[in-house]
Length: 287
Image (cartoon, rainbow, N blue to C red; front, side):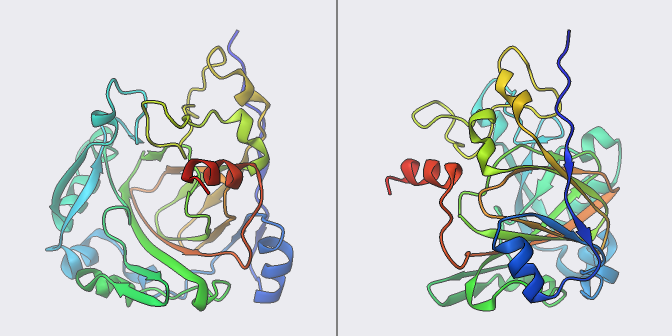
């Protein structure tokens, strides 16, 4: 008999969150939260549809993820070359591919900051992608993100049906994900669930050591029995919402809008986190 996945906890939601409360109730204790409507003040909220983006940055050539399915990456494929495949086009061409035609085809493409960041800050040096600068002008750094510890800002574009594979961010940063256009759902796991998530082992053939071997859409109880002992958290995002993902939490996103646009703001915590996932990553990096 097929084993049912565990019932998810719901991430707390609020409509008002001042900086002090965020620091004390969520950031300090590494607890996620959804803030409804907090990104509605971004200029991007009224602007970022495929037509506006095509007019503004449509001529910019970018690489993007290209899957044979809706999963990014899809680790069920026979080779890593297929799992990590990319293509290149203008952003205008990519936006058309994400919004025209059959849903199965639209879900094969995903653009993230892994291909082109908006902004990056390292050792006091800030680098802004000049070709994507109009997008940066449309967003605002959320008040909970300390400017002096801002690390990276990414934009994400996708069509309906895309799903990102379960992973943790190996940069050790907190993350605020701003849903600009469309809808998404996020599945999250605390660092204490490390042993149940089956991350790819160092020294093995798959170099994505921060990714789980489990397909969360169809977890195999024979291969991954401990996965069913892990308790997920679930958050839903509508356009204009913000989601705080604490450092080292594993997560996967399900993209439900006809067109989805997000901006992620990563920043370094006030102190390094010591948990099962951070220790694992330190061992991988030889620290």
